[in-house]
Image (cartoon, rainbow, N blue to C red; front, top):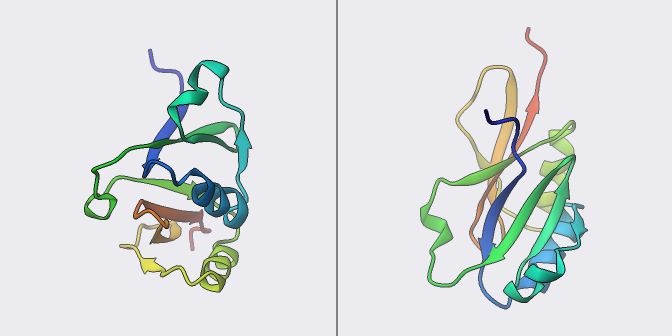
Length: 123
């Protein structure tokens, strides 16, 4: 039986970890989690997202702009995130509406698709 989701992984180009940390830790405010010693030589970094983890690995030869694959971060103030991303000149992409949710998408500096989603009251 599957009991939960331990982590999800995205990738960024090899050698861009510092830029990735500036975006994910600096702009999005996610906390970095120390990787186990046995994995530190593989590049990338890990993030804490609530009680879950996002592992940011490194990978070459992949066009991230061509995939629908993405992470959706659940938020409690989606207008705040529209403002934060706007201040950093990150283009907001309006998503297809889903009943009961407000959401939008954007691409991180490496082309990864990212979604911000907030549950709204059922009216």
